[in-house]
Length: 139
Image (cartoon, rainbow, N blue to C red; front, side, top):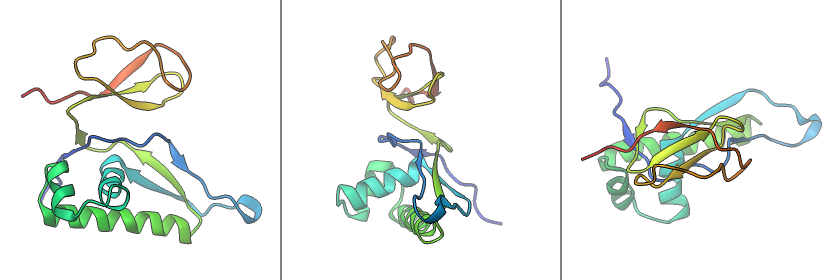
C-alpha cells in the first residue's frame, strides 16, 4: 500500500475550464481530468522554464515528488492529444496563499487577494456571487 497523497500548494490556476479537440467529425474518445497542481507544475517547468529544484521549491514539495507530478501532467496532456480526448480542469486537494473563488453563475475560477474581503464582480460574466473553493492557509 502506498503512502497517502499530500496536499499541494498552488499559486497559479488555469484561466480556462478545459480544452476539447476539434477535427474530423468532432469525435471525442473520453476526457482527461487535469488537476490544478498538474497545471502549476507545467506552468513552472514548461512555460516559465524553471528547473525541477526551483519549481519544487515554489510548490513546497520535494524534487522527487515534483518529478512524479510533472511526468503525470505531461502524460495526461499527451494522452489527450493523441487519443482526441477533452481536458477538464479539476481543483483537487490543494491549498494556496491566496483565496481562490468560483463564480456561481459561470463557474469561472480565479484568484482573489487574500486580504480582500469583497470582490466586485466575476472577470468573465460580471456577476457578483462567488464561493470560496480554496481559502488561504493562515500562518
